[in-house]
Length: 181
Length: 286
Image 1: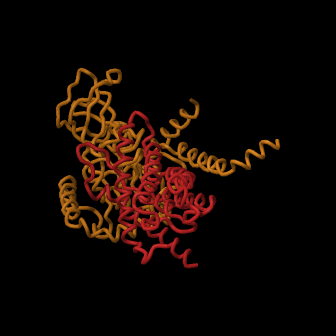
Image 2: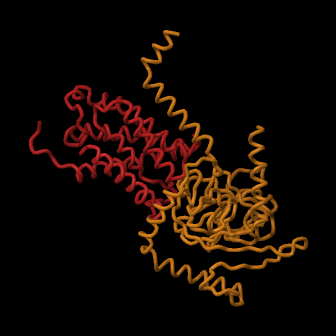
Image 3: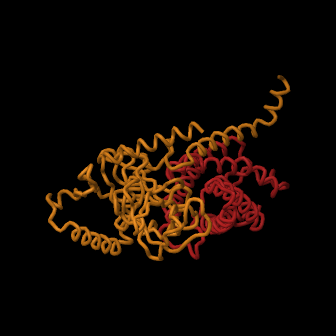
């Protein structure tokens, strides 16, 4: 019950933050300089990435479809966000296995946080997930390989901003455990 | 058959993923132009209401600048009108204007309806503007939208209380334009890089445009005549077959879009609808 409240709260908070504040960032500030394309930091993949480590395969898939639908309605892009999130949800167990092969059993149902996993493994896990998601998202959105440099640029800049935001969020919302297990 | 079932069972996770991804991508590809037919858009009731709330919260941030802009626009409109409005302006903010068009159809009756921008984007391939008026206020598909400084876009989706307009910053969105020497041409947003610039195509080699020349609408697309589009910045390379290509700076600042006017003109809407349906038939036949 407690967990359910936690996940609903996280869902509402992250989506509201994305839709109300981040989607306006490009509009209300002047991030575009020297003809470099404008972009929006995309925080919402964190909802999939921070699900419990051993959660089964189907729940993240359904969760990805739900988040994608909400975002697609709000940004008038039918199918775009959903497709990217489904790819991320499919690749998530593989990413976890790649970085935490030994610890996977020990970590069990714990949520992946920066204190449980350690700074460097957590950073690699988050960054690889974000880069995959962003690259797929921007290549679908721009839809032409002649603009490959723009896709790459947007992926890298937006990805760095998103990873920074996730790290800051980790430091704000999670406290260091008193003694290590 | 048994082997097939075994394979399906062994890789069922991958097949579920593939199925979902194919559904999503087909929805995405089918709706990859600005006239998309899907029901997933932000003119819907719930998202429109959220954007309206948000606009209410963030309304105060740029208030002084917006007031200045509105004042300037009011002054401009008054100077254009010359005569006081017929209706009480406090009761009715819309106004009608008679424009002499040609000898066949003597007058065009435009009605400008003021609207607020609730949500806006300019970093995508097709960009949309959510407006706070809907079918309840008599807004229909294919009405054109102009701002105080120039063209903005046209209405593509309408719900009861909100509507969605494709902005000029959309793929395949062309506007018929006219240069100071009355050459017909076309303005389209071709670069993904900047929300400030568009490309003017179809200028014959004999005509040389100078920097700063004003580009106005011709009246052949859905916008009324003589609405500002932008100013010429310089010539672009290439494009010799379809005439010269020029880079222009759009006069509307899509970053700071707030107050716009929706133009109600039944005949133009009917024409645009007809042209669009012809386009759809053309693409289906290919």
